[in-house]
Length: 240
Image (tube, rainbow, N blue to C red; front, side):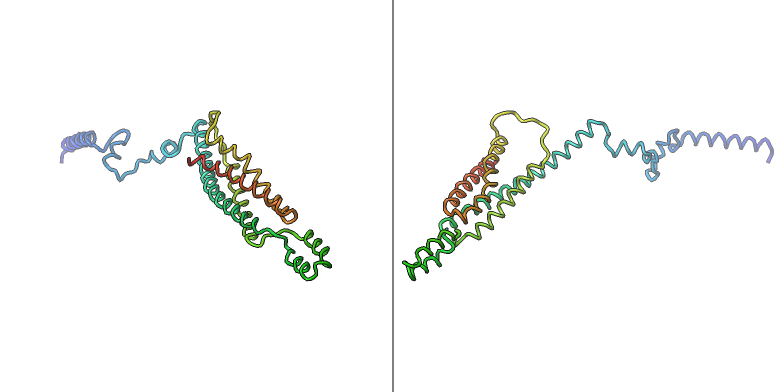
């Protein structure tokens, strides 16, 4: 093959190669066409740290950080108040059962040594009268029935009440201020000034029953029902 023919064929080859190169859909300066036509070829620009942060992580502006913290705080508050509401209903039921058991125990309240004192008085009234009187005065008061049940229910009610109050106390406060005036929240919180002192006073009044008898028992009865009434109102305002 002559030298001129070789040069001619080389020029033709270059011309054809250039034409095919510029007409190919796979060749772009920014390589975007290659990735669109060939989806199996990954776009490595998407794996850069800058791209990843823009697509998957929120912007770390102070406003967005505050909104995220507020959202988490409100979710925690809602969770604790849901438990507060559920345990409050359970406490209400046990408080009612405690008061009913207390009514039964009050009706059967007697001196613990009374059977022995009566025996002494019956065997010899004249000689054992002073012994009978001394024994009756020194005898503690106790209930023949429902006394132990009342004490067990009272302990359970006090524990549930403390848990219920703790959930409300430790829940995050709301940033939005409520309008002043009478509302369900205002009534709910106002009743605390009645049922909380009543609940705290009941164990101390109960300790006096063994010495003071019916007087302390009647006082405990009044305080127990008053506290239960206020507690019922604090629950009812959310349902009625």
